[in-house]
Amino acid sequence: MAGLLDLLNSPMGKQLISGVAGQTNQPENKTADVLSMAMPLLLGAMKKNVSSPQGAQGLMSALSNKHDGSILDNLGGLFQGGVDDSVIQDGAGILGHVFGGKQPQVENALSQKSGLDAGSVAQILKIAAPIVMGYLGRETSQSKVNDSNGMNALLGSMLGGQPQQNQSLITTLLDADGDGSILDDVAGMVMGSNKKKGGLGGLLGGLFGK
Image 1 (cartoon, rainbow, N blue to C red):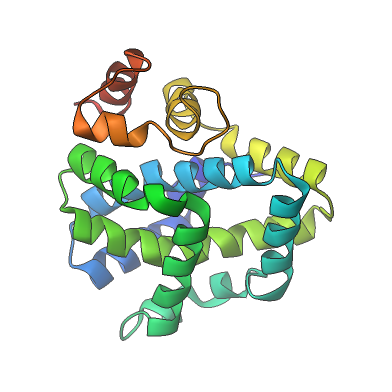
Image 2: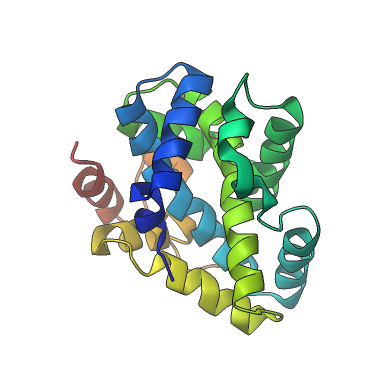
């Protein structure tokens, strides 16, 4: 199975990067930076969500209905003439569900690290989220996943190609103090008050080369 970074380096990934860059009027290299950071975070947050049976059921229901992977069949058409508003609305809904109230902190953190403003990062995330869901939906159906254990394993294997520091980033951002609360320390990181685990800033610095 292809990991996320393989996906971004594939022809489909290059089409995704250039399409999102064109849609948001941002340079392709910066768009690629944001996507390479944001996609593992999206999947990492979903992996936390599926640790409960309700979370897994909700995700699998969305994947079998709306997000079955068909969006990937015509990425060229998706970006030609501009991304449809319904896709962006859908992306906003996915982000709200996955990141909850921490979404602004995630956007700010990605903005600081990529050098793009938070509004552009938010647009990139909204377009990327339905495509990540479509990719996940396709993998779910091809792997015949039908329960939370299978979903957890699938997400783990998609994240498995991550460099070590990226895995550390996901773990640290998604549950820095081990209490099960998603992305609870991003706020501290963005505000610069790292009172829980001092290593977070260093981790991020190492990952993003800043």
